[in-house]
Amino acid sequence: MGLSLQKGQSLSLTKKDGGALSKTRLGLGWDSAAPAKRGLFGKKTAEVDLDASAIFFDANGNAVDQVWYGQLASKDGSAKHTGDNLTGAGEGDDEVILVDLSAVSPAVQNIVFVISSYSRQTFDQVQNAFCRLIDDSTPGSPEIARYQLTDAGTHTAMVMAKVGREGSGWSFKAIGERAQGRTVMDLIPTAARSL
Image (cartoon, rainbow, N blue to C red; front, side, top):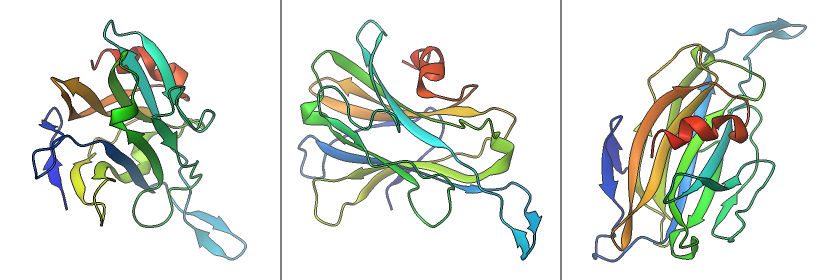
């Protein structure tokens, strides 16, 4: 398991050998804390559908691209969303965004990762939410860092983390800011405040 970060903490993205990290995977996961629904065949766990997205910002804080379930790849080809999970059921990552940091457009300064509920379910119906960064260029894909979200409430979205340029490399920062919004477009102003 990687380094466990607290809200506001960051770390430089370098490999153990000192080289720069290039191929990364950001996994986001969650479980439903919504009350079970009674049906014909007994109680059924209520599903929570959250959507993971990435917003690409330039050095002036302008959003220049997005990756989400409606646009599965960035314009520069550096990032790819692996698909929409509608329930949050199961162990591990529920949604994954792959980013090749070496292929990110030079115009991009920061990539902010957000999760939102299109159906307006609130985070008091979510438990065990996390984001984790994985080194996808190393055999066995080791986890580098994990940020466990503990902030429940009536918000419908969260700004989870950002990856930003730092000198000749990149850094990862846990953000954990509450937000309101259904889609990635709704979250651009809130995400921009985390730069």
